[in-house]
Image 1 (cartoon, rainbow, N blue to C red):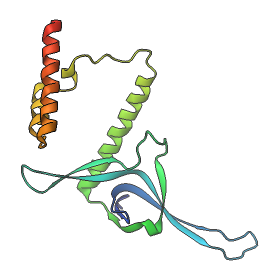
Image 2: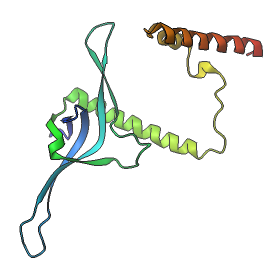
Image 3: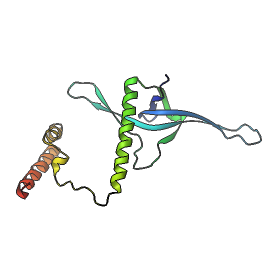
Length: 169
């Protein structure tokens, strides 16, 4: 079975995972004159690879994010000139499976967001713990290496906890 999911390195250094369709078009006239040929790729559902250093175990972790955010366009396919592509190959089976799962997850989230936009009243998130349970707060604070930001985050969590106690939550 041919792998439709490709790894692409672009001239600007971006690494992309996408389904790719190659196109050739000619600008020749209807009288049969030979014109200029256009060679380009269509990247379908492209995701950019984000490389994240793994400080605990060494090496790298990978994250897949939209190459072009859905906030900018509803399009799922993007034309890219052949001269912008440095190299392309079939993605590994592992990356292909993760790519397909990511696309499915992103599509579900987009549908959920669209459905929530149609609600009359947005949800109320007064409780910070809805977003930051204790274990996550600790990880956030512990992973911040710049002391000024760490202090600000600690102050934020402490002030919220004090407000919560005084309100009787």
